[in-house]
Image 1 (cartoon, rainbow, N blue to C red):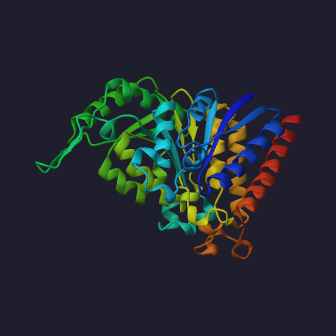
Image 2: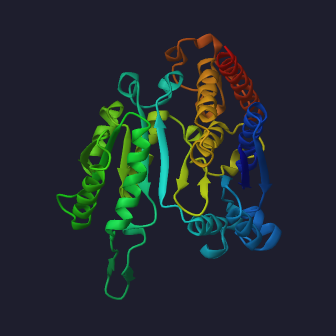
Image 3: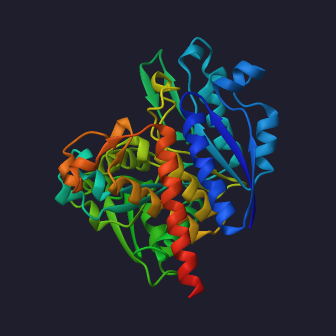
Length: 375
């Protein structure tokens, strides 16, 4: 397998966590005999410093020529005095738009070793493994007309979708569910909103092409409650833009730390992969950053851009092994350690140490897999 990956490490802790993710990808390439090439590029604050632009033309062109884009984090307060279109975050928005991904994938998983890190009780989160599929280019965030008329004291936005926009993201959700536990929960507000009535009708129509996948509909307000009391009941959750933005953030507490959360944006010219956490400039360079979100993002890259499911699963298994061994970065070294089953083994590690531990666990996992295949 040949894969050209654009690396946008970005600002703050971005370079630190991205470096660990790249190390894991290099290991996968070595173990599997793949040919992965990595192209480092500038984005965000570092790009402004070097070129005056948060998204240099050279970066965009190189990303569009790549097979996948792996991003670290973007944001630096020292550029806050610039106009919004010149700040680091503008580069992030521009690259997302240029790559054209319409489906944002965001897992929310309850890791047994981190059960004490969630504010929800362990018996509530146990077994939760949700994949949110959020439509990313339509809805209230992009609909027009939109305006804040200060002279009249009025403001308005437009929630708008076409049948085609709903159908294409619904197909992504059903395809993914067919490879998981074969259930799609579509979230809307069809009891009030006409756009949600279109959404529900279109999703129901698409579901007929996937008879092996169960479809259920949930209103967004009831879904917000169910995520907190019965999260294990859900597999793939399909949402429009606004609802997905809110619900996926709400569900992040199931895992217990932003540092653990990966994401992918697919469906466009080139898929974009980025951990959910921000640039955290206050801890940049201290070795405190959690690289697991970036490493799990690398696993998503292998799954969705390279179709290397076994390698992606091996990375995820390695992360679980390291957590079960009691290894913690600062953001997840809290709570009742006894809930992980081995309080005495829990100890603090740095960003690079955590990356090395995952590398070791991955090597063992792949060795075992290769040995089984050889039998």
